[in-house]
Amino acid sequence: MKKTIIASLLLACICCVAFAQQSDNRIQLVRNATLKIHYAGQTLLIDPMLAEKGTEMSALGVNLNPRVHLTMPVGEVLDGVDFVLLTHAHIDHYDPAAKRLISKDTPWYVQPADYDSVAVKDHFRNTTIVKESVQVGGITIVRIAGSHGRGKLGEMMGASSGYVLKVEGQPTLYIMGDCVWNESTQKAVKEHRPDYIVVNSGGAILPPLSKTDGPIIPNEMETMRIIDDCPANTRFIAVHMDAIDHCQTTRAILRNEARRHGADMNRLIIPEDGESVVLE
Image: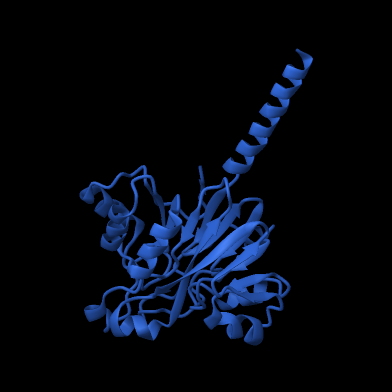
């Protein structure tokens, strides 16, 4: 009887620990496409844009960027970060403030095209190229090469990547980055079957080529196509809105389009700056 009770207590403790680890997985939208992710015991920072409001150039010649303040001190953003994961080195994902404020000893994981910028030019001493995949603190990180737009404009935008984060027994997360919905990103979903997909849904444009080639990241209509094309149990976290002047899709526009489209709003999460989403 005593052995049975002890075994039951041990099992209950194991279940509680597993549940706690599972429920501790969360994504915090810092601002724009900057994410602070707590996953499988690691804390990672995605695409750090840390500048104060209105201190960087405008993309459209309309408003200085970023257009909104951070909702938390930079020290809080950087507190406890184990490593930085960079999708690409455009200024709205990797800005001068990040280069200045992040410790040069912080580990960075980057696509091949950005190694020289991060490691050589900006002197981050612990920079690793993610050619295909790497193991970091028990997390498998798989790089998904994508397209930052279509046509001639997409070619001009240069290399851009997304990343799949995987740990056995944990929800699989796909951070699409500044990549449109095409054969490469569709293949990644079919292969890795993510539970959550972070979509940069801001519909950024760069005139005049966007008139013919379209936005350089998904807009509200393309986000609906992504939702329609993915398995019914996949959930989406839409970011990269309301912070940069060339992003034409706002949170309000995306919600409006989702309702008109009849999208399941339980599957589409549109966090505010500073808000955290628990990965169940």
